[in-house]
Amino acid sequence: MSVSKPVVYASILAAVALVAYAVGSYAATWTAELKFAESDAKIAALRGELMGQIAGMRSRSEERATGAAGSLEEVKRQIQAEMGLFPVKLLRERRESFVELNTYDNRGRLNYGTAGYLGNGYFITVKHGVMALGDDLERSDARRIVSIEILDKGKKIKAQVVDAGNANVEVHPGDWAIIKVKKPIDLPPLRVDTAFSYDFAEPVVRLGNDYSKGIILSTGYIGQRTSNGLVTCLTDGHPGVSGGGVLDQQGSLVGIPVGRMEGDFRFSFILPLRDDMFRKVPGLSVSSAVPVPTGD
Image (tube, rainbow, N blue to C red; front, side, top):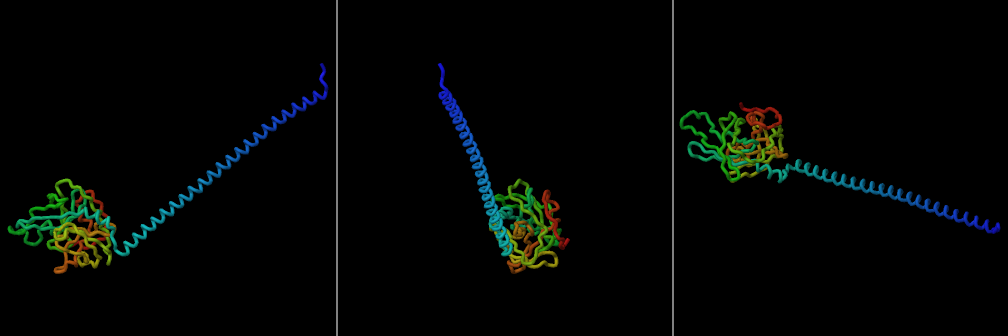
């Protein structure tokens, strides 16, 4: 049976058209997928760029906040330094490093003072608080200290003198002593600075056992150096504060109160700390100080 040419041509054209349609559909699908992929890549790139910008904005914001906080702290420090102010938290922490000191002499008399903790069981105080002074100590009836105690959280702890200056009177550059307790003690040690300059009008704070009523603080300003190396200051010099602490604005121990002018509790004398005072205190690091007269 023969097929006419028109029919053959029509079949061929139909087949070609079908193939062309299939190829066109595939090409269109492939092109669309390619465009979608390109769009996804662009979206991912935009997302990454946007996240980077957000992260950068957050970082700059945090930097500004940190910088603002740092600037605020610096301003606070400058104001404190200029006005002679002391952080209350710092003073409360340093108060824990001082203890009441009680001594008893051979005449049955109780004497009270203050001592500052240096660590490892060692304290610094005044010599006249723990040793009798004078030129007649060889006499049989001379006054002598027979017992030394510190009061820690209400408990009495025995102590002994391990080193002392050469003072034979009060308000003397050798009026210092190092004592040590015989039992373990849990107190925060003081940071010692022997390089404090004691410039005129430099603000300081004094902590001491005023009238044996516990550790109390008083603020004041540095006055003048005396000819024997002591320093004058207008801080309360009530009985009991001798041997306490004189702190600078950083909370470092820079001196000890050793006495007052007769008849004037406000006019007191400070003994600046010196390296030789700590020669028998093991493990204590002190800075180098400018030499001053020692009276030795």
